[in-house]
Image (cartoon, rainbow, N blue to C red; front, side, top):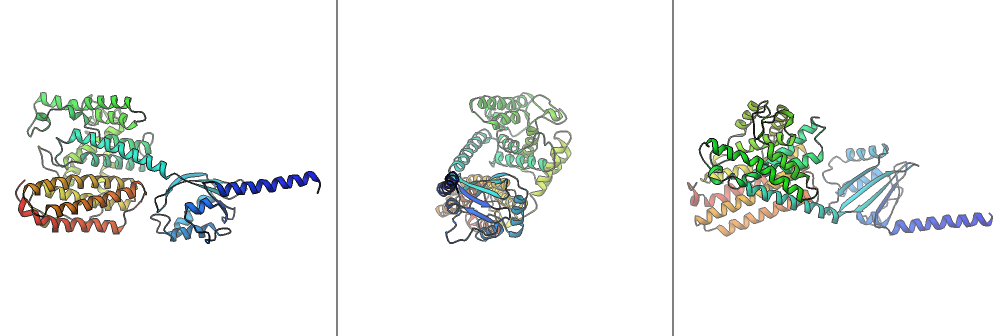
Length: 476
């Protein structure tokens, strides 16, 4: 070997040593899979990020065996069928597609994972810990949503007796948009961003009611023509407010959609709505969806001028109005959503649960219905819907417990503090469950969690709440 060739060999060895040192030193985890789908190499960061001890043999091991080991260790949430899970992963490798995705580990660490196919065959996976950035982004999103809910409830609080109307409307809007997408309808409009923005924006549909006087908003009887005209101005007032806000806040697409929804959620598909008499597809899709969700939830809720309707009666009304008040295509998808949510019943209301107070009984029915809808959402494995219902449950339990505690305190119930402690414990537990879905991205509730919710609610209503029934009976 001549001197020049010797130098080149030394340079090559030096490069390989340097590359090995670099791979050992970087914070990104590296997993190298060869063309035969065996593990060819890993670096210390990979072991650290996945908490794999040094004595766990990896090199030369089939990738399928590594996946099985991780599955058995509980690394992947909600993966009950190990063989199907592994087959799906190996199919992706054989397809040689570059992929980038995020995964939350059981310890809460969020990993950004990139799978890169190599020209010579095989794959290199990189793993980056993005927990801090993800938590910051999610907390900002939660804070923004909390501000939207606060703004919406401020405009609604005089009009809605049992609260949390806007959260229920938002979920119905999101579910209906998703159903339309799954059906292959309005695909030129509906994508993930539209579903998210439309659901959030729908919470602001009645924000213009801030400008409506109490004497009109809370009037128990029919309105005069002048009062009706003033009430209808909430659509244009809300749109104006939200357009102004959207110009002040960067990257707030939900406010722009909110202005559309506020303006058009009382337009009718046949052109007989207000404020501008729009018809058909000239009404923005988000407005058409929100119109259905708002009317349905309003019909099923208590208002100063009406008792709540049953789901069956509200569904019949939607069917009658499809094609006139409502877009028939959207109405069909919406009614499928309502049908889907009735699939599972963990708890059934009966008269033995009554505490003798109309409002408390009604709130208990809503809590029971919310938990039953959680069980139905789990059947559909829709993580987003589950998270939204848990949000409703958190907000509604806080509202209900505050209402109940004020009522029994005024009635002189002697065990008030014990009741408050039970309430606080449940609210904290549901809040932690919400974090599981928001931060850990759990996909399913599981029978254990649903069983706890069912048993707690049944025992609390039939046990703890029965203790105060004599104090508040007939105090409606």
